[in-house]
Image (cartoon, rainbow, N blue to C red; front, side):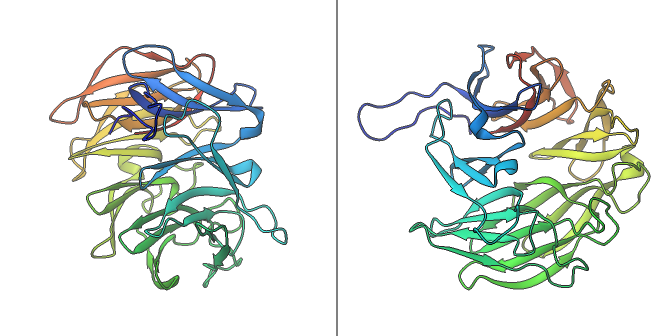
Length: 347
């Protein structure tokens, strides 16, 4: 849903109608977070070098987090997300090396479960009282670090996407989903995925987790890479569209009902990006936006009013599209994002 209002104690705070947005400066020295109004008004952003230079945006249980990967820090955003973050959490213990946090999920007890790419003790748990613990997901990974890249908690179960890159950053080994019982903090199973290298954050829809699984970005013909869906009930994985069919590596995916959209990167050294749409059964795949000059497109979101937002790092806008019943798009007006490349959206 779109941000509409926030604050429960006087004076009530009115939040602008829009979507959360994370951006990064063109020189990669600072980041911004705030609200992108959907009526064409300028984005309301908070910028700061303290936010780091390698950001991500995570949403879980109605809470929003700015993941400062380069700082080993998670910032929790205020309800309107257009002022300074209200709290922050370190993702590493003093004895640990750089943890490179990627994603955060909120458990039923309010604890934060953080997926960390940089260490074998891949999940860091911060309880509401501030106490900390970790879960080792190293398993049978050949280098002792399974490269946890995303986490979602559904009911009492946590699902963690494991890239299993070795030697980093090459994708050679099969990738996995680790299934964890939240109450006991025990890994109950590990499911091998059909695609390799689940990249970025998983997208939750109807008890399913959608993944962009690009394999190696240097190749566009890997049959065990593409757009993948993991059923959290049956614990099975399906490669809905493989890489040769897509014509490139899936970098990011968004889902709304029976429609999907994906940012696709080619295998050149520039990883030129384009936009594709498809039905969630894998049919009606169409190129919705011609290839850009570079790795230009970042940020993809279906809004509640039936639009698709697509971030453009070079034009400093979010392109908007009206989504048709057959999942094809009609281009709408661009929304300005000031002089900051778009990196992520969230409802």
